[in-house]
Amino acid sequence: MSSAAPSPTPARRLPLAGVLRVGRPSDIWFKPALSVVVAVGVPNLTLLALGRLDLAMYTMAGSLCALYAHNLPYAARARALAWVVLGMLAAVAVALVTASLTSSAVVLVAVGALLAAVQKALCDATRIGPPGPVIFAFISSASLFTPQTLGQVPGHLALAAAAGAWAWLVGMAPGLVRPHGPERRATARALNAAAAYAEMSVAPSASTAASAEASPTASAGRERARAAGAAAVHAAWQSLFATGARSEPRRALERLVVRAEIALAAPADTDPGRLRSWARDLRGTGPVPSVEPASAADELLGVEAERAAGRRPLADRLGPLLPLVLRTALGCALAGYVSLALGVGRPYWALVTAASLYQANITLTWSRGVQRVVGNLVGVLLFAAVTPLAHLGPTALVLCCLAFNFGAEALISRNYWLGSICVTPMALLITEFTGFQRPGELMTDRIVDTVVGALVGFAAAVAVTNRRAGDRIENALDTVERAREHTARLIAAERPAPGALDAARRSLAAALVELRATADAAAGEWWQRAVPTERVLLAERTGHRTLATAVRRQGLHALEGTRA
Image (cartoon, rainbow, N blue to C red; front, side, top):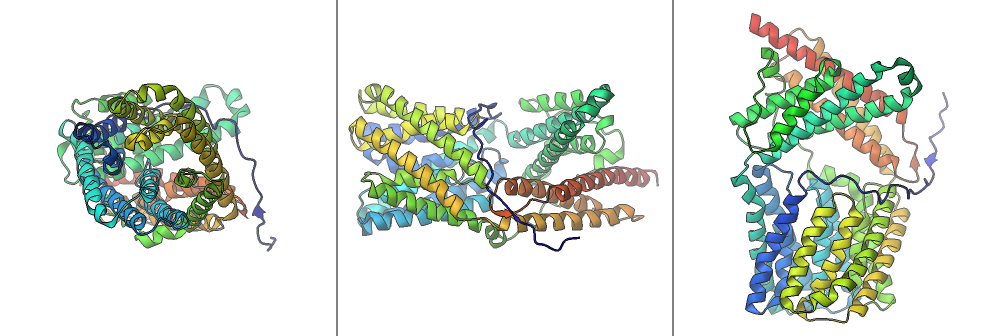
């Protein structure tokens, strides 16, 4: 065996095919779209009635918080939205105070870059989900370049806080009608993912010759489907654990998630149509489908899992993010300074463009850059077309902004560039809340800042290497192996401690989900050790086999208990 250190992975080809492909919309695309219209519309229309539309930028800071946490159960959503609002207020406070103390563009860009880096770190570490740090960066950067006096800061923060409280109410309001909606959706996704895996696992037997010819492709597809199913089931359990008390609807959802787990363990014995039927029933507002367990085992599998599986401390979650944070700080600062050097009057647009690029790896960052540039350029053309309508008066201006708010959230889940088509004219129109401006100048600044932010931001991503990606794979592999061995020992035990096998199974499932996410992220990174693909695939296969055995072992043990 060679003892030579593995060579770094060279720069990969950057993809263009598929970057702009339009996908299916999110199953809840209308929820953030309607929420942001209500959250933004009420404060803006109120300011319009009072003749103070110039203050709308401060209320927008709080209103845009309504975009977050739509996939979380309402108990968890209440906490998450509160933290989002507090985080937004903190960022705006820093920006406004800085703007009141200095007018130096060099200092303002530096502070904006640091804020963007902190926002990137916290959003990724807490996994708050879309739209991530971009909204924070947009609001705080714009606030930095808004003329301000120190005496005005408290009043402007009060407006943001009031709008943030309204956004919190808007985000929580659907719970009055459908209190278990997020958990139902998460369970439906798990059922559909398990059904998809079951269908792929049974399909090859229909034609032995055809399946043998396409076995590598089919096998890879099944592996992806199994990983997606495991991730969906894990997400469903996490959603159920965040709901609070175990009410009867939650118990019914637990039994459905158990059925999804069993389908992943024994796909050949699964009826995919039945799983999909249950998933369809969960989409409405009717009662949760009643699943009568075939045995006491089904009733007990997975239900008593530990709610607090022990989330890693925040400091531990921030460590692996250091390269991404450094990329954000460097890229945003350089983009802002290049924009200043070119004489652009709004360098924060270049800063925000750079901040929006940074994804889990270089390849995804490149794809996001292409999407951002294309979307912004088309959005500038849309702004040119809508400007005559928006300039009819303040009311038309506000209504156009609301329409673009809705369009952005309705389209962005299909592809980021589609959402950017609406975000761009919305951002340009917001600058006119203090008074109509020359469209040609706005459009030129936006185009220059978009190109500068994308080019400089991507260059910073290439310059700051992420050597830790390989280490994270090794750590994830070690974690999976430890969890698998622990689960295997409990499976072999005659009578494991109550709940021990279930907790071990969940730890192994979470470790497998994390391994797949880590491997996918490392696969698109540059200048690192080669990804140990074979080891990852072997760890996933053995881990999933152990999970399947654990599910069967729990069923057998539960049956023995009921017969004793």
